[in-house]
Image (tube, rainbow, N blue to C red; front, side, top):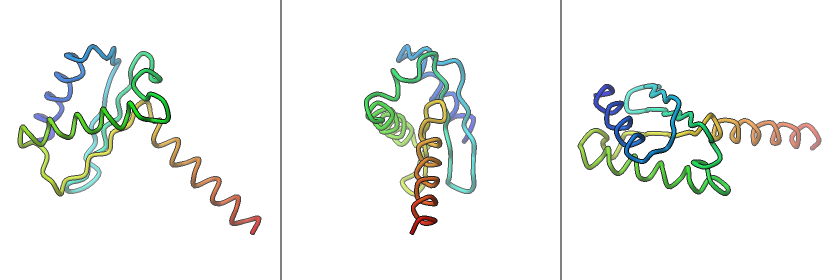
Length: 102
């Protein structure tokens, strides 16, 4: 199933003309996937405050579900050039700082 997902994602990214250098789809566990897309210009896909990233995630998940490649209880987290991961790491660092001041 992962191979079919990769092919469909690749086709979507090519048809959207997103200038993607590479993407990786990792299976983190049963029903848990992480997709990292590395485009030529990440800011164009991320958008203002991550709105482009959220829209792309919705699009990809909807297409995968329509093709029966992603079930409702399957989690797919999409990231652009590790933007989301870096944002989450920054929140953890800020939380740790506040806790130590506290």
